[in-house]
Image 1: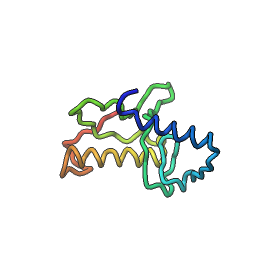
Image 2: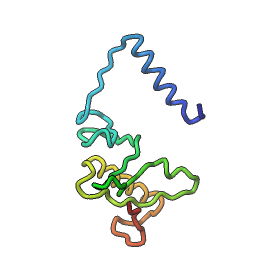
Image 3: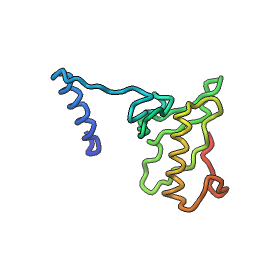
Length: 127
């Protein structure tokens, strides 16, 4: 296992130990969870954390991908992630739209300090 995957072993070790020890665990579900995970969750509810785990894509009626985002596409050192276009109207959940906007705010803050959401010099990633 790679060095960065140690937390995965710890997660499984805890899960197995809790199951073998019959440890009761109460995990509140959305909308009252502390954390949500789009696209599995569709509303933010009372969550304070958006845990981005899975990439997702939207397809048109012909099953052609019309919008896609996966953080794993932006792993090269020095690679600046693009500003994302909003997913196609009517396709994304409230939470997915929120996550795209939070990611874009972070990209602007880190890579384009002083820019705004209306800055025409920052081109969105289309599709």
